[in-house]
Amino acid sequence: MMDILHNLSGGFGVALTLENMIYCLIGAALGTLVGVLPGLSPVTTIAMLLPLTFKMPAVASLIMLTGIYYGAHHAGSTTAIMMNMPGEPTSVVICIDGHPMAKQGRAGPALCVSALGSFFAGCVSVAVIALFSPPLAVIAQSFGPVEYASMIVLALVAVSVITSEAAVTTISMAVLGLLLGTVGTDISTGLMRFTLGFHQFDEGLNFVAVAVGLFALAQITFNLGAKTTRVIATKVTGLIPTREDLKAAWGPIWRGTALGSAIGIFPGTGPLIASFASYSMERRLAKDPSRFGKGAIEGVAGPEASNNAATFTHFIPMLTLGIPAGAPMALMLAALMIQGITAGPQLMTQHADLFWGVIASMFVGNAMLLVLNLPLVGIWIRLLAVPYRFLYPVVLVCCCIGVYSVNNSAFDVLFAAVVCLIGFLFVQLECSPAPLILGLILEPMLEENFRRALLISRGDAWVFVERPISLAILISAVALTVVFCAPALRRKATQGVDVPL
Image (cartoon, rainbow, N blue to C red; front, side, top):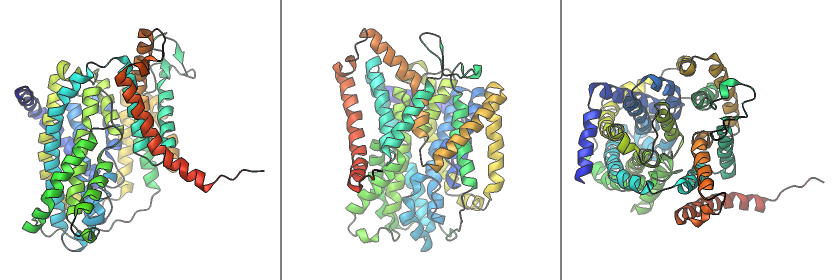
């Protein structure tokens, strides 16, 4: 415990420098803006700003990117409450009771309880990161290539099957990402693979161009054709909740924090699942479940706390194991790779200033978000009146400049445009690009550990089931696939298939 406190004090020494404080504020402010404006997402914003991290110190870049991520989840409830339009998918459940409260003239208490719940959950979950990351990293140091290869497979399967009802489709997207990750120079033989004669692909596909094309450009292109109407329910007249509101919200905030902190640790889960799980739990525990959907403050407090707790603990697998638990974590892992830093068990020993500095900055950023979201709520609501046709051209230009600046190559911009067309097709087909990005990021790690495992076992593939930890991980991956794919296959079987004659 004393070691953790000592490391945290060192982390605050890093996080409270003027430069890092500024980057933390920038990240929190951008995250709030992204969370308030429907149509933008933290993944899009992180992908767009990823090229800028080339010229930034590693600690500052990760502090800014993490601020964008948890800031967006913190602020997504604002539009959910005021407009019945969640700024983030994770805030969908807040609409159920938050918007009815706004219609009843209680938007202020709903926003205040939401912000306070987010702040409390954020502080507790960051403490969870500080407490559980060191022992988990120690355990991970005993992992060999066999266990790491199996863990990567589990992460890909979990992200694919848990986050979508179309598990077969998302698994296919993950496999496509792995295949795209093989483009470039073979790490063992030095031979070129699948470059199609383009020397720009010799070192693999430009990850920044792929990320910007799939998320930023494709999402903007899709949103330009979407027709949305934005009507603010009411004005915020007062933010102070009553004593009864605080009494009713305190229990859900505690329970949501505990539930979200636990759920966020596992790959493939995250804030969205945590918020829905919390809402379901609060409704079952309520003495009068009929109040839910009509403005019950418990339906705002619990899910919002659970959402933000899971947002922070989602960092644990990426920081301690080097395995991202979702698309935003994959982008942050890429930001570390750009800086030449390998996330994993050695991160907190070889780059202690970065590890503990980022954790300490989460406490600082969480306090900043409380100030940004409550006193300035009127400003954020006014920003909702900005037409998207004025916002998107600026974002597109910034994306193109960012992609070009990585290698000073116009080819990368054209490649991002091609990826944008593919990403737009994915959006139309309702295929999530997140597993693809995860597969693209993890392919080199999977290939390297898989080959090492086979070299150690002299080509015996049974080594993956002979090692107990690896066997348990692979059984978990198979079980997840069966559990989440079986209902869809059963539905298709009962509906029947028309066979042409």
